[in-house]
Every structure is written in C-alpha cells, then in structure tokens.
Length: 156
Image (cartoon, rainbow, N blue to C red; front, side):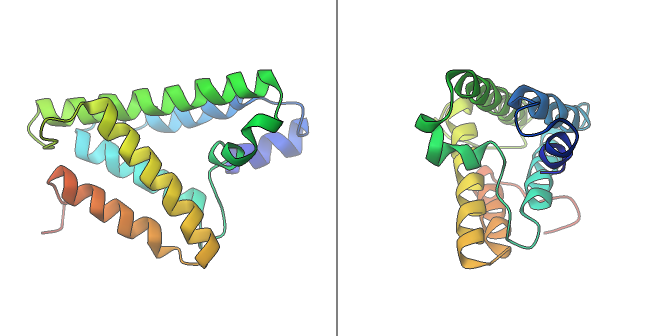
C-alpha cells in the first residue's frame, strides 16, 4: 500500500505500473532471503498485516481482481506478472520448508499450497475490510500455520 500510494502521489495513477509495485514488494521479499522458511512465511504474513492496517485496506493487486476485465491489456499483463511473482515466491518458501522438514503438506504440490495461502490471505483482507475486523487475517495466518504443522518461534 505504501508503495502504491507513494507511486501514485509522485507519478500519478497512470505514471506507474504494477511491475513498479512488484519490484518494491520483491525488495521486501528479498529481505526474507537467507532466513528459514517459517521466518520467510512470517515476513509474508507481516507484509499483509501492514497492508491491512486496522482492517480498512486491501492489497493493491488484489483490489483489481473484481474489475480485471475493465482494465487495459497492459495492466492485465502487469497483474499477471505480479501474481506469478507472488506465487513463485510462496511456492519456493513452501518447497524449502518441506525439504527442511519445517512444513508438512501431505501429497499436495507446493504450488497448490502457495495458491491456497495467497487466496486465503487475499480473502482475509476482503472479509476483514467488509466486517471492519483486522483479526480475520490473524485467524487465517494461524490456520495456515496449523495446516503446515508449525508455530512461529517463541510460541507453543
């Protein structure tokens, strides 16, 4: 949200692309590199916690899902690249977590679990906004942790 707001304010709505936002979010994802998979996933949850604020904001990319057909082809292409980058990153985290014995996903593919996490988080942002309940995201994150079979460091 901060990236989108800053880019809108400095370049106008038409003066930036979702690739610009993806690049900046990619920098936040890079901050998680070198950490164990559980910590990387917590960085992910924290990013969306920051986006969500007090339950009043949605993900900039996710907010375009409802109007996807109404935006231009270049914007659609940028949104596709943004979503791919997002899912690729999550898939890597899940795969690494399974390989390191930190996550259990049964017979599911890491990409499918990544899609479940992304969809759950995006849904939590929408439900949280509609209900003015910022805790929906925390509930979803906890459910994902339990599904993967771990608790964040410092908890039981």
